[in-house]
Amino acid sequence: MAIIAETDITQGQVRSIMTDDPFENMLAQMDRAKEYADVDDGVFERLKHPERTLKVTLPVELDSGEVKVFEGYRCQFDSARGPFKGGVRYHPSVTQREVEALAGWMTWKTALVDLPYGGAKGGVICEPKDLTQNDLESLTRRYTEGIRRMIGPETDVPAPDMNTNSQTMAWMMDTYSMYEGHSVPQVVTGKPLEIGGTPGRVEATGRGVSIVTERLFEYLDRDLSGASVAIQGFGNVGSNAAKLLDEAGARIVATSDVTGAAYDPEGLDVSALDAHVTAGGLIDEYVAGDRRDVPIADGDGDRGDGWWDAPEMISNEELLTLDVDVLIPAAVEGVITADNVRELRASAIVEAANGPTTVAADEVLTERDVQVVPDILANAGGVIVSYLEWVQNAQEFSWPLETVNAELERRIGRAFDQTIEQYDAKDLPDLRTAAYTLALERTASAHEYRGLFP
Ligand code: NAD
Image (cartoon, rainbow, N blue to C red):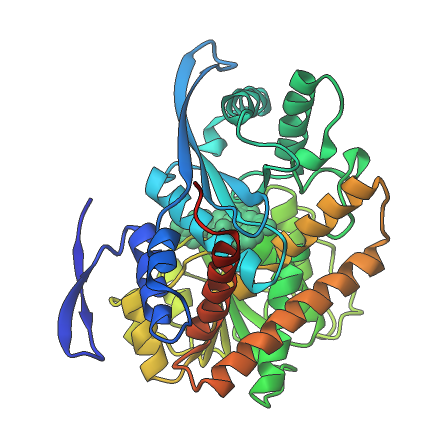
Protein backbone atom coordinates (compact mmCIF):
# COMPACT_ATOMS: atom_id res chain seq x y z
CA MET A 1 0.00 0.00 0.00
CA ALA A 2 1.43 3.34 -1.05
CA ILE A 3 2.26 5.76 1.70
CA ILE A 4 1.76 9.28 0.49
CA ALA A 5 3.37 12.00 2.55
CA GLU A 6 0.95 14.85 2.98
CA THR A 7 2.24 18.20 4.11
CA ASP A 8 0.71 19.11 7.41
CA ILE A 9 0.51 22.83 6.78
CA THR A 10 -0.69 23.77 10.28
CA GLN A 11 2.25 22.13 11.96
CA GLY A 12 4.66 23.16 9.23
CA GLN A 13 6.02 19.65 9.07
CA VAL A 14 5.58 16.63 6.87
CA ARG A 15 3.56 13.87 8.39
CA SER A 16 2.92 10.51 6.80
CA ILE A 17 -0.69 9.62 6.40
CA MET A 18 -1.76 6.68 4.29
CA THR A 19 -4.20 8.74 2.27
CA ASP A 20 -5.33 5.72 0.29
CA ASP A 21 -6.08 3.89 3.53
CA PRO A 22 -9.44 4.97 4.97
CA PHE A 23 -8.77 3.05 8.19
CA GLU A 24 -5.67 5.17 8.92
CA ASN A 25 -7.78 8.21 8.16
CA MET A 26 -10.44 7.12 10.65
CA LEU A 27 -7.82 6.46 13.35
CA ALA A 28 -6.32 9.90 12.75
CA GLN A 29 -9.78 11.47 13.11
CA MET A 30 -10.20 9.62 16.44
CA ASP A 31 -6.77 10.80 17.63
CA ARG A 32 -7.65 14.38 16.76
CA ALA A 33 -10.83 14.22 18.84
CA LYS A 34 -9.23 12.31 21.75
CA GLU A 35 -7.41 15.45 22.81
CA TYR A 36 -10.77 17.04 23.73
CA ALA A 37 -12.80 13.95 24.70
CA ASP A 38 -13.29 12.64 28.19
CA VAL A 39 -12.29 9.04 27.40
CA ASP A 40 -10.14 6.63 29.43
CA ASP A 41 -6.89 5.70 27.63
CA GLY A 42 -7.52 1.93 27.95
CA VAL A 43 -11.03 2.20 26.54
CA PHE A 44 -9.78 4.47 23.75
CA GLU A 45 -7.21 1.85 22.78
CA ARG A 46 -9.99 -0.76 22.68
CA LEU A 47 -12.04 1.49 20.37
CA LYS A 48 -9.31 1.50 17.74
CA HIS A 49 -9.75 -2.19 16.93
CA PRO A 50 -12.68 -3.87 15.18
CA GLU A 51 -14.25 -6.72 17.17
CA ARG A 52 -14.00 -9.09 14.19
CA THR A 53 -13.85 -9.24 10.39
CA LEU A 54 -14.97 -12.25 8.39
CA LYS A 55 -13.54 -12.76 4.92
CA VAL A 56 -15.58 -15.00 2.62
CA THR A 57 -14.79 -16.61 -0.73
CA LEU A 58 -17.77 -16.57 -3.06
CA PRO A 59 -17.71 -18.87 -6.10
CA VAL A 60 -20.59 -17.97 -8.42
CA GLU A 61 -21.66 -19.47 -11.75
CA LEU A 62 -22.40 -16.46 -13.97
CA ASP A 63 -25.02 -16.31 -16.72
CA SER A 64 -22.14 -16.53 -19.20
CA GLY A 65 -21.35 -20.04 -17.86
CA GLU A 66 -18.09 -18.85 -16.30
CA VAL A 67 -17.45 -19.69 -12.64
CA LYS A 68 -16.06 -16.57 -10.98
CA VAL A 69 -14.65 -16.46 -7.47
CA PHE A 70 -15.44 -13.22 -5.64
CA GLU A 71 -14.18 -12.06 -2.25
CA GLY A 72 -16.38 -10.44 0.41
CA TYR A 73 -16.11 -9.13 3.97
CA ARG A 74 -18.24 -8.34 6.98
CA CYS A 75 -16.65 -6.30 9.72
CA GLN A 76 -18.29 -5.94 13.14
CA PHE A 77 -16.55 -3.00 14.74
CA ASP A 78 -18.19 -2.39 18.10
CA SER A 79 -21.37 -3.59 19.82
CA ALA A 80 -21.17 -1.93 23.24
CA ARG A 81 -24.29 0.18 22.51
CA GLY A 82 -26.37 -2.47 20.74
CA PRO A 83 -26.51 -4.82 17.73
CA PHE A 84 -24.08 -4.16 14.88
CA LYS A 85 -25.53 -2.08 12.06
CA GLY A 86 -24.14 -1.14 8.67
CA GLY A 87 -24.52 -1.34 4.90
CA VAL A 88 -23.15 -3.68 2.26
CA ARG A 89 -21.16 -2.21 -0.63
CA TYR A 90 -20.47 -3.76 -4.05
CA HIS A 91 -17.49 -2.05 -5.71
CA PRO A 92 -14.23 -3.05 -7.44
CA SER A 93 -12.18 -1.02 -4.96
CA VAL A 94 -13.56 -2.67 -1.80
CA THR A 95 -10.77 -3.78 0.57
CA GLN A 96 -10.76 -5.23 4.07
CA ARG A 97 -9.30 -1.98 5.43
CA GLU A 98 -11.99 0.07 3.73
CA VAL A 99 -14.75 -2.15 5.15
CA GLU A 100 -13.18 -1.86 8.62
CA ALA A 101 -12.98 1.93 8.36
CA LEU A 102 -16.60 2.12 7.22
CA ALA A 103 -17.60 -0.13 10.15
CA GLY A 104 -15.78 2.22 12.52
CA TRP A 105 -17.54 5.25 11.04
CA MET A 106 -20.88 3.43 11.51
CA THR A 107 -20.01 2.99 15.20
CA TRP A 108 -19.40 6.72 15.66
CA LYS A 109 -22.47 7.60 13.57
CA THR A 110 -24.94 5.45 15.53
CA ALA A 111 -23.50 6.82 18.79
CA LEU A 112 -23.71 10.44 17.59
CA VAL A 113 -27.35 10.16 16.53
CA ASP A 114 -28.00 8.08 19.66
CA LEU A 115 -29.37 4.88 18.15
CA PRO A 116 -29.18 1.67 20.21
CA TYR A 117 -26.70 0.13 17.76
CA GLY A 118 -23.04 -0.55 17.25
CA GLY A 119 -21.27 -0.32 13.89
CA ALA A 120 -20.58 -2.81 11.09
CA LYS A 121 -20.03 -2.84 7.34
CA GLY A 122 -19.92 -5.36 4.52
CA GLY A 123 -18.40 -5.33 1.07
CA VAL A 124 -17.91 -7.51 -1.99
CA ILE A 125 -15.16 -6.85 -4.53
CA CYS A 126 -17.02 -6.77 -7.84
CA GLU A 127 -17.98 -4.51 -10.74
CA PRO A 128 -21.80 -4.59 -10.70
CA LYS A 129 -21.96 -3.04 -14.19
CA ASP A 130 -20.41 -6.24 -15.61
CA LEU A 131 -22.94 -8.52 -13.89
CA THR A 132 -26.46 -9.48 -14.98
CA GLN A 133 -29.41 -9.33 -12.59
CA ASN A 134 -29.15 -13.14 -12.19
CA ASP A 135 -25.43 -12.85 -11.45
CA LEU A 136 -26.13 -10.21 -8.79
CA GLU A 137 -28.80 -12.39 -7.21
CA SER A 138 -26.49 -15.45 -7.10
CA LEU A 139 -23.64 -13.35 -5.69
CA THR A 140 -25.89 -11.76 -3.04
CA ARG A 141 -27.32 -15.11 -1.95
CA ARG A 142 -23.86 -16.66 -1.75
CA TYR A 143 -22.52 -13.68 0.23
CA THR A 144 -25.50 -13.88 2.61
CA GLU A 145 -24.85 -17.58 3.14
CA GLY A 146 -21.20 -16.72 3.83
CA ILE A 147 -21.99 -14.20 6.55
CA ARG A 148 -25.31 -15.61 7.83
CA ARG A 149 -23.80 -17.06 11.01
CA MET A 150 -22.82 -13.58 12.16
CA ILE A 151 -25.93 -11.60 11.15
CA GLY A 152 -29.42 -11.65 12.68
CA PRO A 153 -32.11 -9.25 13.94
CA GLU A 154 -30.49 -9.01 17.37
CA THR A 155 -26.85 -9.38 16.36
CA ASP A 156 -26.03 -7.59 13.10
CA VAL A 157 -28.43 -5.92 10.67
CA PRO A 158 -27.14 -5.10 7.13
CA ALA A 159 -28.56 -2.39 4.85
CA PRO A 160 -27.85 -0.99 1.35
CA ASP A 161 -24.77 1.07 0.49
CA MET A 162 -23.00 1.81 -2.80
CA ASN A 163 -24.35 -0.31 -5.68
CA THR A 164 -26.76 -2.24 -3.48
CA ASN A 165 -30.45 -1.43 -3.08
CA SER A 166 -33.81 -2.71 -1.83
CA GLN A 167 -33.68 -5.67 -4.26
CA THR A 168 -30.32 -6.70 -2.79
CA MET A 169 -31.86 -6.53 0.69
CA ALA A 170 -34.84 -8.63 -0.46
CA TRP A 171 -32.46 -11.38 -1.66
CA MET A 172 -30.50 -11.20 1.61
CA MET A 173 -33.67 -11.36 3.69
CA ASP A 174 -34.99 -14.30 1.64
CA THR A 175 -31.74 -16.27 1.85
CA TYR A 176 -31.48 -15.76 5.62
CA SER A 177 -35.17 -16.62 6.08
CA MET A 178 -34.84 -19.85 4.07
CA TYR A 179 -32.23 -21.11 6.54
CA GLU A 180 -34.34 -20.03 9.53
CA GLY A 181 -37.50 -21.70 8.17
CA HIS A 182 -39.64 -18.56 8.51
CA SER A 183 -39.64 -14.95 7.34
CA VAL A 184 -37.21 -12.72 9.23
CA PRO A 185 -37.74 -9.21 7.84
CA GLN A 186 -35.84 -7.62 10.73
CA VAL A 187 -32.50 -9.13 9.62
CA VAL A 188 -31.94 -6.33 7.08
CA THR A 189 -33.23 -2.80 6.56
CA GLY A 190 -33.78 -0.91 3.33
CA LYS A 191 -36.17 -3.64 2.12
CA PRO A 192 -38.96 -3.13 -0.45
CA LEU A 193 -42.21 -1.95 1.16
CA GLU A 194 -43.94 -5.22 0.26
CA ILE A 195 -41.71 -7.27 2.58
CA GLY A 196 -41.39 -4.99 5.58
CA GLY A 197 -39.60 -1.93 4.25
CA THR A 198 -40.50 1.50 5.56
CA PRO A 199 -41.75 4.45 3.57
CA GLY A 200 -39.02 7.08 3.33
CA ARG A 201 -35.97 4.77 3.50
CA VAL A 202 -34.83 5.21 -0.12
CA GLU A 203 -34.55 8.99 0.16
CA ALA A 204 -33.64 9.05 3.89
CA THR A 205 -29.91 9.74 3.54
CA GLY A 206 -30.46 12.50 0.97
CA ARG A 207 -33.25 13.96 3.14
CA GLY A 208 -30.89 14.00 6.14
CA VAL A 209 -28.22 15.75 4.03
CA SER A 210 -30.77 18.36 3.01
CA ILE A 211 -31.95 18.85 6.64
CA VAL A 212 -28.42 19.38 8.00
CA THR A 213 -27.59 21.75 5.13
CA GLU A 214 -30.65 23.84 6.05
CA ARG A 215 -29.66 23.72 9.74
CA LEU A 216 -26.10 24.77 8.88
CA PHE A 217 -27.38 27.77 6.95
CA GLU A 218 -29.62 28.74 9.90
CA TYR A 219 -26.64 28.41 12.26
CA LEU A 220 -24.44 30.52 9.97
CA ASP A 221 -27.29 33.00 9.59
CA ARG A 222 -27.21 32.64 5.82
CA ASP A 223 -30.02 32.28 3.31
CA LEU A 224 -30.28 28.89 1.57
CA SER A 225 -32.63 30.34 -1.00
CA GLY A 226 -30.59 30.91 -4.17
CA ALA A 227 -27.42 29.47 -2.58
CA SER A 228 -25.24 27.57 -5.07
CA VAL A 229 -24.60 23.86 -4.46
CA ALA A 230 -22.24 21.39 -6.18
CA ILE A 231 -22.87 17.69 -5.55
CA GLN A 232 -20.31 15.04 -6.47
CA GLY A 233 -22.21 11.82 -7.24
CA PHE A 234 -25.82 11.67 -8.43
CA GLY A 235 -26.68 8.23 -7.02
CA ASN A 236 -29.15 7.44 -4.26
CA VAL A 237 -27.79 10.01 -1.80
CA GLY A 238 -26.70 12.75 -4.23
CA SER A 239 -29.88 12.74 -6.32
CA ASN A 240 -32.23 12.82 -3.32
CA ALA A 241 -30.23 15.58 -1.65
CA ALA A 242 -30.28 17.51 -4.95
CA LYS A 243 -34.07 17.18 -5.32
CA LEU A 244 -34.79 18.28 -1.74
CA LEU A 245 -32.32 21.17 -1.75
CA ASP A 246 -33.70 22.28 -5.12
CA GLU A 247 -37.19 22.23 -3.55
CA ALA A 248 -35.84 24.23 -0.60
CA GLY A 249 -34.78 26.98 -3.04
CA ALA A 250 -31.07 26.24 -3.45
CA ARG A 251 -29.46 26.28 -6.92
CA ILE A 252 -27.84 22.96 -7.86
CA VAL A 253 -25.14 24.18 -10.24
CA ALA A 254 -23.22 20.93 -10.74
CA THR A 255 -23.52 17.21 -10.18
CA SER A 256 -21.67 14.17 -11.46
CA ASP A 257 -21.28 10.46 -11.94
CA VAL A 258 -18.31 8.36 -13.05
CA THR A 259 -18.45 9.95 -16.54
CA GLY A 260 -17.91 13.49 -15.19
CA ALA A 261 -20.01 16.47 -14.11
CA ALA A 262 -22.81 18.58 -15.59
CA TYR A 263 -22.30 22.26 -14.75
CA ASP A 264 -24.64 25.22 -15.21
CA PRO A 265 -24.01 28.31 -13.06
CA GLU A 266 -27.69 29.25 -13.50
CA GLY A 267 -28.75 25.94 -11.93
CA LEU A 268 -29.47 22.50 -13.37
CA ASP A 269 -32.94 21.13 -14.14
CA VAL A 270 -32.77 18.57 -11.32
CA SER A 271 -36.02 16.77 -12.19
CA ALA A 272 -35.02 16.32 -15.86
CA LEU A 273 -31.61 15.04 -14.80
CA ASP A 274 -33.19 12.72 -12.25
CA ALA A 275 -35.62 11.30 -14.84
CA HIS A 276 -32.69 10.69 -17.22
CA VAL A 277 -30.54 8.96 -14.57
CA THR A 278 -33.47 6.94 -13.18
CA ALA A 279 -34.03 5.64 -16.73
CA GLY A 280 -30.42 4.40 -16.75
CA GLY A 281 -28.81 7.43 -18.42
CA LEU A 282 -25.33 8.79 -17.70
CA ILE A 283 -24.33 12.40 -17.04
CA ASP A 284 -22.17 12.69 -20.19
CA GLU A 285 -25.15 11.58 -22.31
CA TYR A 286 -27.36 14.17 -20.60
CA VAL A 287 -24.88 16.95 -21.32
CA ALA A 288 -24.53 15.78 -24.94
CA GLY A 289 -28.34 16.08 -25.32
CA ASP A 290 -28.95 12.34 -25.58
CA ARG A 291 -31.61 12.32 -22.83
CA ARG A 292 -33.97 9.67 -21.55
CA ASP A 293 -37.44 10.18 -20.10
CA VAL A 294 -36.99 13.95 -20.04
CA PRO A 295 -40.36 15.71 -19.90
CA ILE A 296 -40.84 17.99 -22.93
CA ALA A 297 -40.53 21.63 -21.83
CA ASP A 298 -44.13 22.86 -21.78
CA GLY A 299 -43.36 26.48 -21.20
CA ASP A 300 -44.89 26.44 -17.72
CA GLY A 301 -41.63 26.23 -15.85
CA ASP A 302 -40.47 29.15 -13.77
CA ARG A 303 -37.25 29.22 -15.81
CA GLY A 304 -39.06 30.76 -18.83
CA ASP A 305 -40.82 29.44 -21.92
CA GLY A 306 -39.05 26.76 -23.87
CA TRP A 307 -36.14 26.71 -21.42
CA TRP A 308 -33.84 23.80 -22.08
CA ASP A 309 -31.18 22.85 -19.56
CA ALA A 310 -27.90 23.01 -21.48
CA PRO A 311 -25.07 22.46 -19.02
CA GLU A 312 -21.41 22.11 -19.89
CA MET A 313 -19.31 19.05 -19.11
CA ILE A 314 -16.56 19.42 -16.50
CA SER A 315 -14.52 16.80 -14.64
CA ASN A 316 -15.20 15.47 -11.15
CA GLU A 317 -12.02 17.26 -10.00
CA GLU A 318 -13.24 20.58 -11.42
CA LEU A 319 -16.60 20.14 -9.67
CA LEU A 320 -14.81 19.99 -6.32
CA THR A 321 -13.11 23.34 -6.90
CA LEU A 322 -16.18 25.31 -8.08
CA ASP A 323 -16.85 28.62 -6.36
CA VAL A 324 -20.07 27.57 -4.61
CA ASP A 325 -21.79 28.17 -1.28
CA VAL A 326 -21.93 24.45 -0.46
CA LEU A 327 -19.97 21.48 -1.75
CA ILE A 328 -21.55 18.08 -1.14
CA PRO A 329 -19.28 15.11 -1.86
CA ALA A 330 -21.76 12.20 -2.29
CA ALA A 331 -19.73 9.55 -4.10
CA VAL A 332 -16.59 7.89 -2.76
CA GLU A 333 -14.12 8.49 0.07
CA GLY A 334 -10.79 10.34 -0.07
CA VAL A 335 -11.69 12.97 -2.70
CA ILE A 336 -10.69 16.07 -0.71
CA THR A 337 -6.97 15.71 -0.06
CA ALA A 338 -3.86 17.79 0.62
CA ASP A 339 -3.39 17.88 -3.16
CA ASN A 340 -6.61 19.75 -3.98
CA VAL A 341 -7.79 21.31 -0.70
CA ARG A 342 -6.14 24.66 -1.38
CA GLU A 343 -8.02 24.94 -4.67
CA LEU A 344 -11.42 24.40 -3.04
CA ARG A 345 -13.53 27.57 -3.06
CA ALA A 346 -16.74 26.36 -1.36
CA SER A 347 -17.48 28.16 1.89
CA ALA A 348 -19.13 25.10 3.45
CA ILE A 349 -18.91 21.35 2.91
CA VAL A 350 -21.59 18.81 3.81
CA GLU A 351 -20.13 15.30 3.72
CA ALA A 352 -22.82 13.05 2.27
CA ALA A 353 -20.27 10.36 1.32
CA ASN A 354 -18.43 8.44 4.01
CA GLY A 355 -14.85 9.64 4.57
CA PRO A 356 -14.54 12.09 1.65
CA THR A 357 -11.93 14.29 3.41
CA THR A 358 -8.45 13.18 4.47
CA VAL A 359 -7.15 14.35 7.84
CA ALA A 360 -4.48 16.55 6.27
CA ALA A 361 -7.10 18.27 4.11
CA ASP A 362 -9.33 18.65 7.14
CA GLU A 363 -6.66 20.61 8.98
CA VAL A 364 -6.40 23.06 6.09
CA LEU A 365 -10.18 23.48 5.98
CA THR A 366 -10.25 24.19 9.73
CA GLU A 367 -7.45 26.70 9.36
CA ARG A 368 -9.38 28.41 6.55
CA ASP A 369 -12.64 28.43 8.58
CA VAL A 370 -14.54 26.36 6.04
CA GLN A 371 -17.45 24.79 7.94
CA VAL A 372 -17.54 21.03 7.36
CA VAL A 373 -20.56 19.02 8.50
CA PRO A 374 -18.87 15.64 9.06
CA ASP A 375 -20.09 12.44 7.41
CA ILE A 376 -21.11 10.78 10.69
CA LEU A 377 -23.69 13.55 11.11
CA ALA A 378 -24.49 14.60 7.53
CA ASN A 379 -25.31 11.14 6.15
CA ALA A 380 -26.90 9.66 9.29
CA GLY A 381 -30.42 9.96 7.85
CA GLY A 382 -30.09 6.51 6.26
CA VAL A 383 -29.27 4.66 9.47
CA ILE A 384 -31.89 6.63 11.41
CA VAL A 385 -34.66 5.50 9.05
CA SER A 386 -33.15 1.98 8.98
CA TYR A 387 -33.59 1.97 12.75
CA LEU A 388 -37.22 3.10 12.32
CA GLU A 389 -37.76 0.24 9.86
CA TRP A 390 -36.24 -2.25 12.32
CA VAL A 391 -38.49 -0.94 15.11
CA GLN A 392 -41.59 -1.25 12.89
CA ASN A 393 -40.60 -4.83 12.00
CA ALA A 394 -40.22 -5.68 15.70
CA GLN A 395 -43.65 -4.19 16.39
CA GLU A 396 -45.14 -5.83 13.28
CA PHE A 397 -46.67 -2.45 12.60
CA SER A 398 -46.11 0.12 9.88
CA TRP A 399 -45.95 3.87 10.17
CA PRO A 400 -47.01 6.44 7.56
CA LEU A 401 -44.36 8.42 5.68
CA GLU A 402 -45.14 11.60 7.63
CA THR A 403 -44.33 9.88 10.95
CA VAL A 404 -41.06 8.48 9.58
CA ASN A 405 -39.97 11.84 8.12
CA ALA A 406 -40.90 13.72 11.29
CA GLU A 407 -38.91 11.27 13.44
CA LEU A 408 -35.94 11.50 11.04
CA GLU A 409 -36.01 15.30 11.24
CA ARG A 410 -36.30 15.23 15.03
CA ARG A 411 -33.40 12.82 15.51
CA ILE A 412 -30.94 14.30 13.00
CA GLY A 413 -31.89 17.83 14.14
CA ARG A 414 -31.16 16.90 17.76
CA ALA A 415 -27.77 15.43 16.79
CA PHE A 416 -26.98 18.60 14.81
CA ASP A 417 -27.92 20.82 17.79
CA GLN A 418 -25.87 18.70 20.22
CA THR A 419 -22.85 18.86 17.89
CA ILE A 420 -23.14 22.65 17.66
CA GLU A 421 -23.56 22.91 21.45
CA GLN A 422 -20.43 20.81 21.98
CA TYR A 423 -18.51 22.86 19.38
CA ASP A 424 -19.45 26.18 20.98
CA ALA A 425 -19.29 25.11 24.66
CA LYS A 426 -15.86 23.49 24.42
CA ASP A 427 -14.56 25.95 21.80
CA LEU A 428 -13.50 23.04 19.57
CA PRO A 429 -11.56 23.55 16.34
CA ASP A 430 -14.26 22.18 14.03
CA LEU A 431 -17.59 20.35 13.84
CA ARG A 432 -15.94 16.98 13.13
CA THR A 433 -14.05 17.16 16.42
CA ALA A 434 -17.30 18.09 18.17
CA ALA A 435 -19.17 15.15 16.61
CA TYR A 436 -16.34 12.71 17.35
CA THR A 437 -15.97 13.76 20.98
CA LEU A 438 -19.69 13.12 21.54
CA ALA A 439 -19.56 9.75 19.72
CA LEU A 440 -16.38 8.59 21.46
CA GLU A 441 -17.61 9.63 24.91
CA ARG A 442 -20.94 7.80 24.43
CA THR A 443 -19.29 4.61 23.15
CA ALA A 444 -16.59 4.72 25.84
CA SER A 445 -19.20 5.23 28.53
CA ALA A 446 -21.09 2.11 27.35
CA HIS A 447 -17.82 0.15 27.56
CA GLU A 448 -17.11 1.43 31.05
CA TYR A 449 -20.57 0.47 32.36
CA ARG A 450 -20.35 -2.98 30.78
CA GLY A 451 -16.75 -3.58 31.91
CA LEU A 452 -14.17 -5.98 30.53
CA PHE A 453 -15.15 -9.61 30.06
CA PRO A 454 -14.04 -11.97 31.57
P1 NAD B 1 -24.78 5.06 -5.39
O1 NAD B 1 -24.07 3.87 -5.92
O2 NAD B 1 -26.26 5.12 -5.47
O3 NAD B 1 -24.21 6.40 -6.11
C1 NAD B 1 -22.86 6.72 -6.17
C2 NAD B 1 -22.66 7.86 -7.16
O4 NAD B 1 -21.29 8.22 -7.17
C3 NAD B 1 -23.02 7.52 -8.60
O5 NAD B 1 -23.53 8.67 -9.25
C4 NAD B 1 -21.66 7.13 -9.20
O6 NAD B 1 -21.62 7.30 -10.62
C5 NAD B 1 -20.77 8.13 -8.50
N1 NAD B 1 -19.38 7.71 -8.42
C6 NAD B 1 -18.88 6.47 -8.14
N2 NAD B 1 -17.54 6.49 -8.15
C7 NAD B 1 -17.17 7.76 -8.42
C8 NAD B 1 -15.94 8.43 -8.54
N3 NAD B 1 -14.78 7.78 -8.40
N4 NAD B 1 -15.95 9.77 -8.80
C9 NAD B 1 -17.12 10.44 -8.94
N5 NAD B 1 -18.33 9.87 -8.84
C10 NAD B 1 -18.35 8.54 -8.58
O7 NAD B 1 -24.27 5.22 -3.88
P2 NAD B 1 -24.97 5.97 -2.67
O8 NAD B 1 -25.79 4.99 -1.93
O9 NAD B 1 -25.57 7.24 -3.18
O10 NAD B 1 -23.71 6.29 -1.75
C11 NAD B 1 -22.86 7.42 -1.98
C12 NAD B 1 -22.02 7.67 -0.74
O11 NAD B 1 -22.91 7.91 0.37
C13 NAD B 1 -21.11 6.54 -0.30
O12 NAD B 1 -19.95 7.08 0.28
C14 NAD B 1 -21.92 5.83 0.76
O13 NAD B 1 -21.12 5.10 1.67
C15 NAD B 1 -22.57 7.02 1.43
N6 NAD B 1 -23.78 6.68 2.19
C16 NAD B 1 -24.84 6.08 1.59
C17 NAD B 1 -25.98 5.81 2.35
C18 NAD B 1 -27.22 5.22 1.73
O14 NAD B 1 -28.24 5.14 2.43
N7 NAD B 1 -27.21 4.84 0.46
C19 NAD B 1 -26.00 6.10 3.72
C20 NAD B 1 -24.90 6.73 4.30
C21 NAD B 1 -23.79 7.01 3.51
